[in-house]
Length: 579
Image (tube, rainbow, N blue to C red; front, side, top):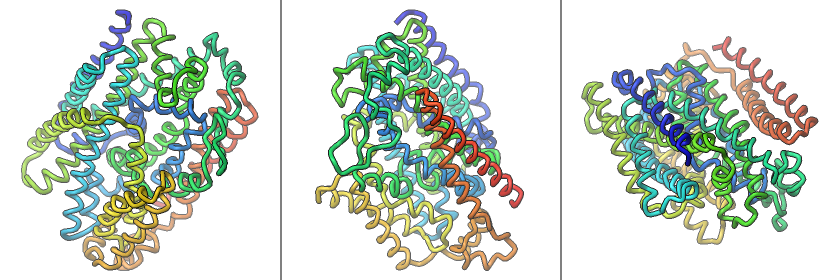
C-alpha cells in the first residue's frame, strides 16, 4: 500500500476511538445507558446500527460467491427473511419498546412464571450471550482473516495477530462507550463501508474489460441477471439458482417464520430487539426497524452484486469455492492509491461494527440476566457498569480462543437455521397467546437438536430437513404446552397490562381487565405487513432494473413501491390516532 492508504486507515481508527471516548462518561451512568442508550435513540441511528451490524466483513464476499455461482437469484437464500422482518416491523416493534425491559432474555420472566421461567432466563443468557455469541464472533474473525490473507498476502500463521489486534480496539471502545458509542460509531462505519463498496462497483463495472453495464449484460448469460430462481426438479440451469419445488416452499413458506437466525429472529430478538428497546418511543422503534428492512434487503446488496457479476469476467479461473475472493482481488488489482486505503478501512468498519454490537449485546445478557439476576442482585449501578465493561473484555478473550478452533465457516448458517427450526412459532405466539408457557419455549429449543441428527441420518439435506424438523418441533411444544400448567394468572395480568398485545387468544386474560382498551388494529397491521413486503421487494427489484437500464421494469416496480408506501403511511397514521 501507498503511505496515503495507511494514513486513511489510521485516520479511520482514530475517529472510531474518538467517538468512544466522547460517549464513555455518558455510558458510565447506569447499565440502562450502557446497554440501551437511556432508551433515547432516534429511529435513524437505531436503524443504521441494525444495518451496520449485519454488514460484517464477509458479507460482500458471501454475496459475491452467491452471485458468481448462481446469479442474482441466489440471493433469495437470504432475501426470503425479509418477509419475517416486516412481520417484526408491524406486529412486534411497538411491543418490544412497550415492554420496558433491558434485554430480550428478560422478557422470559415478565411473560412466564415459576422455576421454569428462571431456568429459561438463565439458560438463554448463557446460550445466546456466551455460546452462540462467541461462535458468531469467531465466524466473523475467520472471515476477516481470509480477507487479510487475500488482500495483503499476510501469512496464515500470523494473520490472527492482526485480527485480534483490531478486535482489541473494538472491545476497548465498546467497553468504554456502551451502546451510544457503538451506535454512533456504527453510523460512521456504515457510511464509510457503503461509500467504499459503491465506489468499487462503479470503478469495476466501467473497466475496459467489462465495458459498463451494457458490456456486462452482453458478456454474461441472461440467466445470471434473473431476479427470481428457477423452480424445477430438473437439473440446475447454468447461471441461475435452481430450486426444487420442495426447497422453494421451504424458503418462501417456512424458514422465515419457523427458524431462529441471528438478526432475523421471528418476532424480533437479539441486537434487533436491543435497538427497538433503545428507541425513543414506539413510533421510533417501528420506523427504525422499517428502515433496517429496506436498507438491509433492498439497497445495500447492489454494489456487491455488481462486483460479483464482474468478477466472473475478471477472474474466470476461480473455482466454485474460491469465487468469494473475486471481491478482494478486484479491490487489490484495480483500486488507485487512496481509494484502496478507503476500501480497506471500509472492511475494517464492517468488521468492527459487527463485533462491537456482538460484544455489547452479549455482555447485556450475561450481566442483566445472569450476574445481576442470580449472582449479585443488590449492587449499585456503578458496580454493574464496571462489571459490564469487564464482561465485554472477557467475551473478547473467549472469542479469541474459539476463533482458533474454527476451521471452516461453510454451511454454518444452514446448521443454525436447522437447529432453530420450529422455535420461531413459539417466539411469535408467546406475544399473542396466553397459553404459551416457559415449558413451551424450552421444549421448542431442545427438540430440533434431537430431530436434526435423525433427519440427517435418513439422508435428507437442507432445506428439505425443515419439513421434518419444523412439524416435529411444533407437535412437541404444543403437546408440552397442554400437558403443563399455564403461567400464573398474576403474571399474565401484569404482562397484559404492561404490553396489551390484544387479540382473541388473550380473551381469558383481557376479560379480567375491562379497563384496558381492546386492540382492534390487527387487520390494519396485517395489511401493512403485506404492503410492507411489497414495498421492500419493489425497491429491491426496481433498483436493479434502474441499474441495468431496464426502465419499463423500473417504472412498474417504482409504481408498486409508491402505492405500497402510501398504504403503509396511511394505515400508520390511523393506528397512531387510535392509540
